Length: 201
Image (cartoon, rainbow, N blue to C red):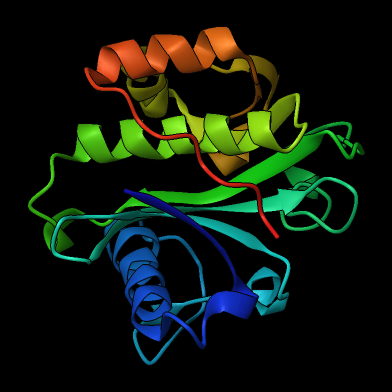
């Protein structure tokens, strides 16, 4: 099940937000060794302070968060504008109310008995559903070459638009075109039909 939430929802479902931030710490700090800020076992940054930041959380049958991603609208501050600005030469600026930046995409590993590929697929389907329901035509995000296999398996591959400078590792910036065809492909590959995600309030 996919839940679409903003930080304003945290008082209503605090356990889910706690599980998400702890899951992110395990993935990005402990496993990937990213230079992220972890306090009290929770990975958070300044974009998580905004009430309108959008989160997609994959919830398993036991009510636990098993995967998540974060969305920022490309009309305000984004990580591409700031933290990732120096990754590309020249810097890339994207501004559109019809584009979302996706960051912090992760499956929470040992926190779930769910298969990681199934969780990734569920998150991608939920993202495409949300985008279609909210007039979004593209999603942008950074990814590694290893993630390309996952996107191909799920059925929604990005179009590469830039490669990061060598000193930042093998990172690419890509765009995912939002379409009903992409959603149908992913849903068929996932092997089940799902309810469409609600619009963010």
